[in-house]
Length: 386
Ligand SMILES: C[S@@+](CC[C@H](N)C(=O)[O-])C[C@H]1O[C@@H](n2cnc3c(N)ncnc32)[C@H](O)[C@@H]1O
Image (cartoon, rainbow, N blue to C red):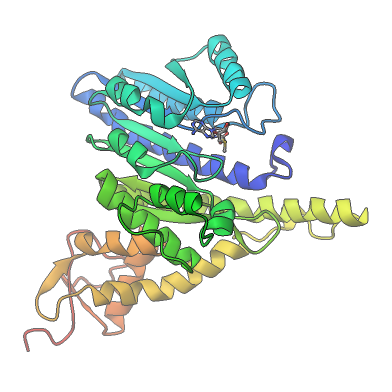
């Protein structure tokens, strides 16, 4: 896979945009089905819109363009099915120059989405945005440059209604530098970002613990029932750049998110990061790298490592959620596992059958040659009721 040149040296943004696009199209395809029951309006809300670091005159490398085109693609699919879906988008940008470019782009752009741009701090526009959304379904994208001005309290009003989902870019690369800083104003900003009301953010939290704190508070503060995150790696180093957190009201959010993660962070990132390393080698040595993008592995090593570890751990998580007596439906068990683990629901469903074959749990109905667990299956610990 070739990366567009405008993303050279910021391949992490390409991967972020790929996740945004893939998820948003699927979100629109799912929620557009409401049009069968009556008129429906789908909203895309880009709370920190930019454009920012764009290398393309046409802004093709921005969340502005990507959000609009993903929404249009979802709308087109429903139109072809005979269902009319109204599409609307809201953009917020603080910086004067960036806002001028945003406005110019939106004015010139033709398309099926009706757009509104707000100039200024995201926090100061939240109530107007919430009013505009009314009771409609909305996908909210929160992609700040850091943690200032991104209080969880600002996100909440946009998520309280039904059919709302959020994708937050937790700028791990940046937050990691300041998360343990003792300066009072930074402690306050961290508290607001992580949605803490009384206590300050605990110091010394690992990357996993930090993200768990964010997800837990997103759920309790913003009225979302399910939240998971994925790591967008540094283009050439073995460390996280961004963490993208998804939050929503339905477990399906997790199934879709983990599939997008496997496809983009697992699959596409392999050639994207190989290409980034090749270009770096060429810049540093003036020599062509022997490894080419075409020879990239099918799965990126960063994701492969997390996925492999979690494929073996996920079944332990699920078994630990089984009661000592009685059974639980598989559909009640998989969401908690997918929140924590970098596995797809399909991988977990296969692991459940493997665990049953190994005698670690029982599946009812006890079908022969089953390959994966299904939502209605009843799972229990062996020896129960004996
Ligand atoms: C990371 S950039 C956005 C990138 C964009 N979402 C994309 O993917 O193409 C963050 C943007 O938010 C703007 N910004 C920073 N603080 C803000 C605030 N409090 N309210 C609104 N915009 C803000 C910055 O000027 C910048 O353009």
